[in-house]
Length: 291
Image (cartoon, rainbow, N blue to C red; front, side, top):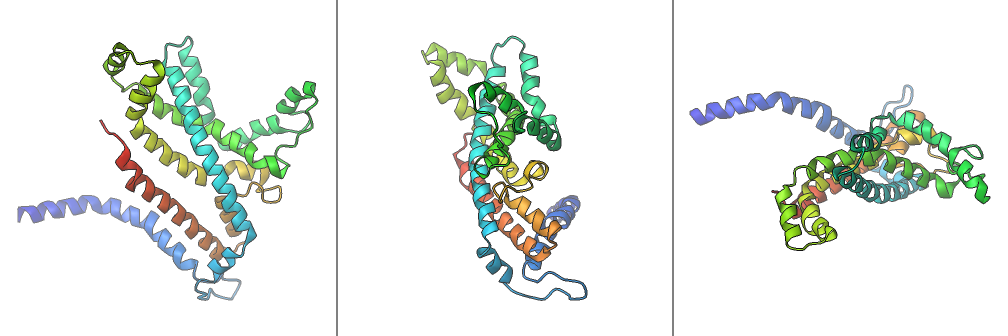
Protein backbone atom coordinates (compact mmCIF):
# COMPACT_ATOMS: atom_id res chain seq x y z
CA UNK A 1 0.00 0.00 0.00
CA UNK A 2 2.90 2.29 0.95
CA UNK A 3 4.65 1.47 -2.33
CA UNK A 4 1.51 2.27 -4.29
CA UNK A 5 1.16 5.60 -2.53
CA UNK A 6 4.79 6.47 -3.30
CA UNK A 7 4.23 5.47 -6.91
CA UNK A 8 1.14 7.70 -7.04
CA UNK A 9 3.05 10.66 -5.57
CA UNK A 10 5.88 10.08 -8.01
CA UNK A 11 3.49 9.91 -10.95
CA UNK A 12 1.75 13.12 -9.91
CA UNK A 13 5.08 14.91 -9.58
CA UNK A 14 6.12 13.73 -13.05
CA UNK A 15 2.76 14.53 -14.63
CA UNK A 16 3.38 18.28 -15.36
CA UNK A 17 6.73 17.52 -17.01
CA UNK A 18 5.22 14.65 -19.00
CA UNK A 19 2.33 16.85 -20.20
CA UNK A 20 4.72 19.62 -21.30
CA UNK A 21 7.03 17.10 -22.99
CA UNK A 22 4.15 15.57 -24.92
CA UNK A 23 2.56 18.94 -25.82
CA UNK A 24 5.69 20.71 -27.03
CA UNK A 25 7.89 17.83 -28.26
CA UNK A 26 6.26 14.51 -29.10
CA UNK A 27 2.86 15.75 -30.27
CA UNK A 28 4.42 18.19 -32.81
CA UNK A 29 6.74 15.40 -34.04
CA UNK A 30 3.78 13.05 -34.49
CA UNK A 31 1.79 15.78 -36.28
CA UNK A 32 4.74 16.50 -38.59
CA UNK A 33 5.04 12.81 -39.53
CA UNK A 34 1.29 12.65 -40.27
CA UNK A 35 1.38 15.90 -42.31
CA UNK A 36 4.23 14.54 -44.43
CA UNK A 37 1.83 11.84 -45.67
CA UNK A 38 -0.74 14.38 -46.93
CA UNK A 39 -0.75 16.98 -49.71
CA UNK A 40 -0.58 20.70 -48.93
CA UNK A 41 -4.06 22.24 -48.62
CA UNK A 42 -4.63 25.00 -51.21
CA UNK A 43 -7.57 27.44 -50.93
CA UNK A 44 -10.78 25.42 -50.71
CA UNK A 45 -8.98 22.16 -51.54
CA UNK A 46 -8.32 20.26 -48.35
CA UNK A 47 -5.29 18.06 -47.73
CA UNK A 48 -5.43 14.59 -49.31
CA UNK A 49 -3.63 11.44 -48.28
CA UNK A 50 -0.72 10.89 -50.69
CA UNK A 51 1.27 8.26 -48.79
CA UNK A 52 5.00 8.50 -49.50
CA UNK A 53 4.69 10.81 -52.52
CA UNK A 54 6.46 13.67 -50.72
CA UNK A 55 9.40 11.38 -49.98
CA UNK A 56 9.44 10.24 -53.61
CA UNK A 57 9.63 13.91 -54.70
CA UNK A 58 12.44 14.41 -52.19
CA UNK A 59 14.54 11.59 -53.65
CA UNK A 60 14.36 13.27 -57.09
CA UNK A 61 14.88 16.81 -55.73
CA UNK A 62 18.41 18.08 -56.59
CA UNK A 63 18.10 21.00 -54.14
CA UNK A 64 17.46 18.54 -51.29
CA UNK A 65 20.62 16.57 -52.11
CA UNK A 66 22.57 19.81 -52.46
CA UNK A 67 21.33 20.90 -49.02
CA UNK A 68 22.27 17.48 -47.58
CA UNK A 69 25.80 17.60 -49.00
CA UNK A 70 26.24 21.22 -47.85
CA UNK A 71 25.06 20.29 -44.35
CA UNK A 72 27.40 17.28 -44.24
CA UNK A 73 30.40 19.47 -45.19
CA UNK A 74 29.23 22.15 -42.77
CA UNK A 75 28.84 19.71 -39.84
CA UNK A 76 31.98 17.65 -40.51
CA UNK A 77 34.04 20.87 -40.70
CA UNK A 78 32.56 23.12 -38.03
CA UNK A 79 32.19 20.51 -35.26
CA UNK A 80 35.85 19.36 -34.95
CA UNK A 81 37.29 22.78 -35.76
CA UNK A 82 35.19 24.66 -33.18
CA UNK A 83 35.84 21.97 -30.52
CA UNK A 84 39.60 21.92 -31.15
CA UNK A 85 39.78 25.72 -31.12
CA UNK A 86 37.70 25.84 -27.92
CA UNK A 87 40.01 23.34 -26.21
CA UNK A 88 43.08 25.32 -27.30
CA UNK A 89 41.60 28.58 -26.05
CA UNK A 90 40.59 26.96 -22.72
CA UNK A 91 44.11 25.58 -22.20
CA UNK A 92 45.54 29.02 -22.96
CA UNK A 93 43.32 30.99 -20.59
CA UNK A 94 43.71 28.30 -17.90
CA UNK A 95 47.49 28.80 -17.89
CA UNK A 96 49.35 31.54 -16.04
CA UNK A 97 48.71 34.21 -18.63
CA UNK A 98 49.10 37.96 -18.21
CA UNK A 99 45.80 39.77 -18.82
CA UNK A 100 43.92 36.48 -18.38
CA UNK A 101 40.53 38.14 -17.76
CA UNK A 102 40.79 40.29 -20.88
CA UNK A 103 41.72 37.29 -23.03
CA UNK A 104 38.79 35.28 -21.64
CA UNK A 105 36.43 38.17 -22.39
CA UNK A 106 37.86 38.52 -25.91
CA UNK A 107 37.35 34.80 -26.61
CA UNK A 108 33.83 34.75 -25.16
CA UNK A 109 32.53 37.98 -26.76
CA UNK A 110 31.49 36.42 -30.13
CA UNK A 111 29.20 34.04 -28.22
CA UNK A 112 27.07 36.79 -26.68
CA UNK A 113 26.59 38.62 -29.98
CA UNK A 114 23.33 37.87 -31.85
CA UNK A 115 23.92 36.02 -35.11
CA UNK A 116 22.43 38.91 -37.12
CA UNK A 117 25.00 41.30 -35.59
CA UNK A 118 27.74 38.78 -36.31
CA UNK A 119 26.55 38.58 -39.91
CA UNK A 120 26.78 42.38 -40.24
CA UNK A 121 30.33 42.36 -38.87
CA UNK A 122 31.44 39.63 -41.29
CA UNK A 123 29.68 41.29 -44.23
CA UNK A 124 32.11 44.16 -43.68
CA UNK A 125 35.03 41.68 -43.63
CA UNK A 126 33.88 39.88 -46.79
CA UNK A 127 32.79 42.94 -48.86
CA UNK A 128 34.56 42.85 -52.25
CA UNK A 129 37.21 45.55 -52.83
CA UNK A 130 36.63 47.61 -49.67
CA UNK A 131 36.16 44.83 -47.07
CA UNK A 132 38.80 44.17 -44.41
CA UNK A 133 40.03 40.94 -46.05
CA UNK A 134 40.42 42.59 -49.45
CA UNK A 135 42.16 45.57 -47.86
CA UNK A 136 44.65 43.15 -46.32
CA UNK A 137 45.17 41.25 -49.60
CA UNK A 138 45.40 44.35 -51.83
CA UNK A 139 49.18 44.90 -51.34
CA UNK A 140 49.71 41.31 -52.57
CA UNK A 141 47.59 41.89 -55.68
CA UNK A 142 44.88 39.50 -54.45
CA UNK A 143 41.99 41.95 -53.93
CA UNK A 144 38.57 41.80 -55.62
CA UNK A 145 37.37 38.58 -53.95
CA UNK A 146 33.61 38.09 -53.69
CA UNK A 147 33.77 35.33 -51.10
CA UNK A 148 30.01 35.22 -50.43
CA UNK A 149 29.08 35.58 -54.11
CA UNK A 150 31.22 32.74 -55.43
CA UNK A 151 29.82 29.17 -55.19
CA UNK A 152 33.24 27.67 -54.41
CA UNK A 153 33.90 29.92 -51.39
CA UNK A 154 30.47 30.95 -50.03
CA UNK A 155 29.93 27.89 -47.81
CA UNK A 156 33.48 28.08 -46.44
CA UNK A 157 32.95 31.76 -45.62
CA UNK A 158 29.93 30.77 -43.49
CA UNK A 159 31.90 27.93 -41.88
CA UNK A 160 34.55 30.43 -40.70
CA UNK A 161 31.83 32.56 -39.08
CA UNK A 162 30.30 29.57 -37.30
CA UNK A 163 33.64 28.37 -35.92
CA UNK A 164 34.46 31.92 -34.77
CA UNK A 165 31.14 32.22 -32.92
CA UNK A 166 30.82 28.71 -31.47
CA UNK A 167 34.39 28.23 -30.19
CA UNK A 168 34.03 30.82 -27.41
CA UNK A 169 30.84 29.13 -26.16
CA UNK A 170 32.46 25.68 -26.01
CA UNK A 171 35.57 27.18 -24.38
CA UNK A 172 33.55 27.96 -21.24
CA UNK A 173 32.71 24.28 -20.71
CA UNK A 174 36.30 23.15 -21.30
CA UNK A 175 37.61 25.87 -18.97
CA UNK A 176 35.24 24.78 -16.18
CA UNK A 177 36.29 21.14 -16.66
CA UNK A 178 40.02 22.02 -16.63
CA UNK A 179 39.60 23.85 -13.33
CA UNK A 180 38.02 20.71 -11.82
CA UNK A 181 41.10 18.54 -12.53
CA UNK A 182 43.01 17.92 -9.32
CA UNK A 183 46.48 19.61 -9.35
CA UNK A 184 47.88 16.55 -7.53
CA UNK A 185 47.29 14.40 -10.63
CA UNK A 186 49.22 16.84 -12.81
CA UNK A 187 51.97 17.17 -10.21
CA UNK A 188 52.29 13.38 -9.91
CA UNK A 189 52.64 13.13 -13.70
CA UNK A 190 55.39 15.76 -13.68
CA UNK A 191 57.24 13.92 -10.90
CA UNK A 192 57.11 10.78 -13.03
CA UNK A 193 58.91 12.72 -15.76
CA UNK A 194 55.98 13.16 -18.15
CA UNK A 195 56.37 15.91 -20.75
CA UNK A 196 53.65 18.60 -21.15
CA UNK A 197 52.37 16.81 -24.27
CA UNK A 198 52.22 13.45 -22.44
CA UNK A 199 50.33 15.09 -19.55
CA UNK A 200 47.85 16.56 -22.03
CA UNK A 201 47.37 13.27 -23.89
CA UNK A 202 47.45 10.83 -20.94
CA UNK A 203 45.90 12.86 -18.10
CA UNK A 204 44.06 15.97 -19.22
CA UNK A 205 42.23 14.77 -22.35
CA UNK A 206 40.89 11.53 -20.75
CA UNK A 207 39.57 13.53 -17.79
CA UNK A 208 37.91 15.96 -20.21
CA UNK A 209 36.02 13.22 -22.07
CA UNK A 210 32.63 13.80 -20.33
CA UNK A 211 32.88 17.50 -21.27
CA UNK A 212 33.95 16.59 -24.80
CA UNK A 213 30.87 14.38 -25.17
CA UNK A 214 28.61 17.18 -23.89
CA UNK A 215 30.26 19.74 -26.18
CA UNK A 216 30.03 17.40 -29.18
CA UNK A 217 26.28 16.96 -28.61
CA UNK A 218 25.82 20.74 -28.55
CA UNK A 219 28.05 21.14 -31.61
CA UNK A 220 25.99 18.61 -33.60
CA UNK A 221 22.75 20.37 -32.61
CA UNK A 222 24.27 23.72 -33.60
CA UNK A 223 25.41 22.40 -36.99
CA UNK A 224 21.80 21.59 -37.89
CA UNK A 225 20.15 24.46 -35.99
CA UNK A 226 22.04 27.62 -37.00
CA UNK A 227 20.64 29.24 -40.14
CA UNK A 228 20.41 32.89 -39.06
CA UNK A 229 23.65 33.73 -40.88
CA UNK A 230 22.42 31.98 -44.05
CA UNK A 231 19.24 34.07 -44.03
CA UNK A 232 21.14 37.29 -43.21
CA UNK A 233 24.07 36.90 -45.60
CA UNK A 234 23.38 34.64 -48.59
CA UNK A 235 19.76 33.38 -48.49
CA UNK A 236 21.07 30.02 -49.67
CA UNK A 237 22.89 31.39 -52.71
CA UNK A 238 24.71 31.61 -54.96
CA UNK A 239 23.14 28.70 -56.86
CA UNK A 240 22.20 26.93 -53.57
CA UNK A 241 25.88 26.80 -52.56
CA UNK A 242 24.99 27.73 -48.95
CA UNK A 243 21.57 26.08 -48.67
CA UNK A 244 21.52 24.02 -45.48
CA UNK A 245 18.79 21.50 -44.66
CA UNK A 246 17.06 23.65 -42.03
CA UNK A 247 17.15 26.70 -44.32
CA UNK A 248 15.61 24.60 -47.12
CA UNK A 249 12.83 23.55 -44.72
CA UNK A 250 12.24 27.21 -43.80
CA UNK A 251 12.25 28.25 -47.48
CA UNK A 252 9.88 25.45 -48.50
CA UNK A 253 7.47 26.01 -45.63
CA UNK A 254 7.39 29.82 -45.35
CA UNK A 255 8.43 31.11 -48.79
CA UNK A 256 6.85 28.49 -51.07
CA UNK A 257 4.08 27.51 -48.56
CA UNK A 258 4.49 23.82 -49.41
CA UNK A 259 3.89 22.71 -45.82
CA UNK A 260 3.55 18.98 -46.50
CA UNK A 261 6.89 18.82 -48.33
CA UNK A 262 8.46 20.89 -45.54
CA UNK A 263 7.04 18.34 -43.07
CA UNK A 264 8.67 15.50 -45.03
CA UNK A 265 12.00 17.37 -44.98
CA UNK A 266 11.58 17.90 -41.23
CA UNK A 267 11.06 14.16 -40.70
CA UNK A 268 14.37 13.50 -42.48
CA UNK A 269 16.12 16.07 -40.28
CA UNK A 270 14.62 14.48 -37.15
CA UNK A 271 15.73 11.03 -38.31
CA UNK A 272 19.31 12.26 -38.85
CA UNK A 273 19.43 13.89 -35.41
CA UNK A 274 17.92 10.77 -33.78
CA UNK A 275 20.57 8.52 -35.37
CA UNK A 276 23.36 10.84 -34.22
CA UNK A 277 21.87 10.96 -30.70
CA UNK A 278 21.65 7.15 -30.61
CA UNK A 279 25.34 6.90 -31.54
CA UNK A 280 26.38 9.52 -29.00
CA UNK A 281 24.38 8.12 -26.08
CA UNK A 282 24.44 4.44 -27.06
CA UNK A 283 28.11 4.09 -28.07
CA UNK A 284 30.23 7.18 -27.35
CA UNK A 285 28.83 7.59 -23.81
CA UNK A 286 30.08 4.09 -22.87
CA UNK A 287 33.62 5.02 -23.94
CA UNK A 288 33.71 8.05 -21.65
CA UNK A 289 35.56 7.83 -18.36
CA UNK A 290 33.55 9.40 -15.54
CA UNK A 291 35.33 10.22 -12.30
